[in-house]
Image 1 (tube, rainbow, N blue to C red):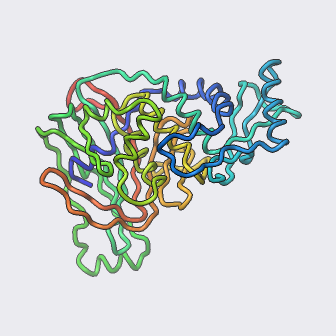
Image 2 (spheres, rainbow, N blue to C red; image 1 turned 30 degrees about the horizontal axis):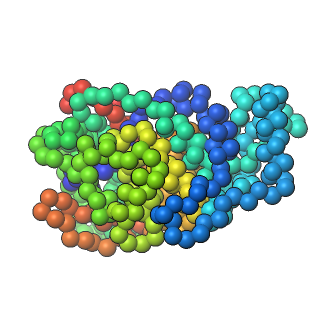
Image 3 (tube, rainbow, N blue to C red; image 1 turned 45 degrees about the vertical axis):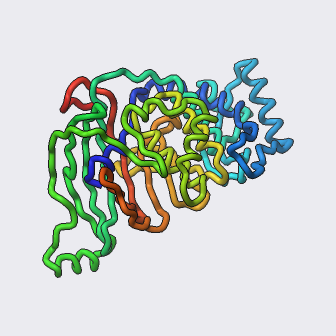
Length: 358
């Protein structure tokens, strides 16, 4: 993952502050709950996908929420999922006040699922205003299984205006082993190098990232469709193999970590929310120890750790089978990832000059 083409795939805009997230979260959750019903099927959904089925108990809860809003009675999102998205998503806990008041005995309770959590994040992301600059900056910490029980952690930074920039790769390398015997075996071989040395260099090239059958430059990333139908059409045209839901997660990992528009990121979250069988788990720590909410595919292969607003990507983890090597091109390199691969997005944004950081 030390190739510039691979490092730039981890770019993530980060303009919303934590305070702004917290101020907006309550309204976003309320709106998301109201919108947690199936969208009309589009021509891109060849199979029937059942929507939410409200039981009398859940319907009553929804009615109570409406009453609470009218008379300013506190309401709380808490407990286990009571609504099921397409595919019947599994249960999870998520607690957040809708009114800003503390919960009291007899407070109406609304249950929230992965779909509603992501829809709330889309509402927050859609309002983002990203300040511009000459260079896009990103800093990430990657944890890469390299075989023989070893995992290499390294930090990479990149500055790019799409045609030139600077990369600082393989910084602060740390090697860990799954077991002490794995480490002993490595030492018995003379502790061979497992990762390239740190390197910082300026470059002059048009950077491209590859997602499925598509390649994108920095400029093209910013012009991706900002509506759900258009973005889903683009994703389906890029999808080449495997389940589309898995590809959506892979797309979300990249499109939420690039200098894409606020509308594109919001639409990506809405498409992600529409996938079947999502698993939501709260109070998860990312590889850097930051608390977030994990959203995982039904098969458990892909996990996104998202901050509590539902709008900002903190980390990605892959737990599927090792990817098979693929041939690159004259201008690109394909680096397959192994089970246990993780990347944490530390900071990013537009800056005015090389070396400046967010």
